[in-house]
Length: 95
Image (cartoon, rainbow, N blue to C red; front, top):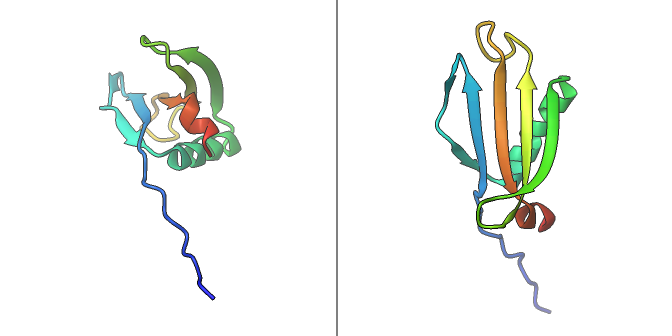
């Protein structure tokens, strides 16, 4: 009897997250869909404002843009923090 081991899928970091806080902007960071989904779920539990929009990029690729607005002082010293995630729809549906 042979046993097969599961192949691990490569980690694809094609979700882009940009944070706007303190009147500035942090450099975009690339995440996996799992990391992005975990972060978005935690903000929803903490009652942050979360909006999801479906759109396309300049090349016509379907995207889901997630806008998260945290309460003042949640992450920063009294400032409102906004996180923007750009998630390719094909990656989101491949889960």
